Length: 130
Image (cartoon, rainbow, N blue to C red):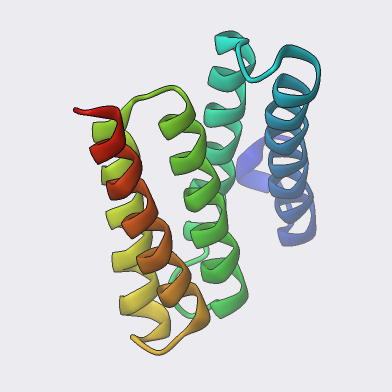
């Protein structure tokens, strides 16, 4: 059915399909192409972005959706860093951190993961010399 008439369970199913595709593209690229297939990385980035947006569309009153959206954003940031798109990787990390803090609080595990991941990204950027 058209998206406007989809039920919640059908929309949720679409989100999980997007996340599955993103993970499949990402892992296939790393396993079979040594992380060098930029097209697969772009597909993964798009699927992670789409999955995060769909989860965030449920709003801040759905903690499970927020947690999953933050996870999708962190995967998106990882893909962007693999593509050496440092600026967008950092932007997505900051977005994930802001969402986690606002919706889940400073002490949430997801907030701590965002901070740790952002620190790791900054270290990779420094090592890359950009």
